[in-house]
Image 1 (cartoon, one colour):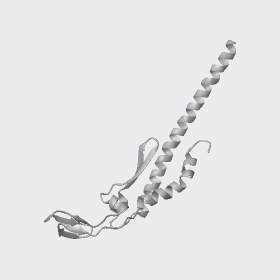
Image 2: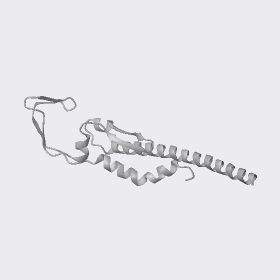
Image 3: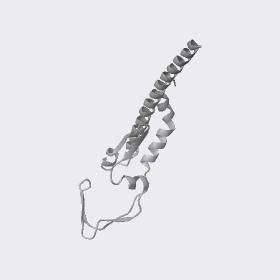
Image 4: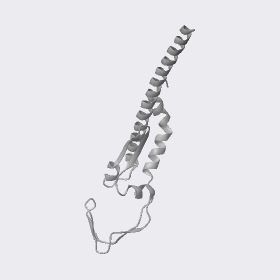
Length: 144
């Protein structure tokens, strides 16, 4: 009986060790997949982003926000207005000097901006990468 018990304990220990290694490999694969997918979305969003000065595309980054969650963000202050669109709006306060070095534009506020349609560069990139994500995930996971 003691011998059988010893074999059973050894089997459980080995099973626990192998399971732990497998779980660790899966955790690492999830992290690699999340980062790669976030970077893929960011790189594709740079291609889809509207280009006037290149600042918007240059502000797009993909990174991890946790061990298994990646995120792609555009950090330019006007990124949301480009992504979602903007209605006509006033820029600046009365008498405020407004300037844009990139466009060689100078004015006294307020200036009425006509608005712009949504470009959806981040959403389009996310959808395109999501459609192909199974291959990226499969590449990183053990035994697939």
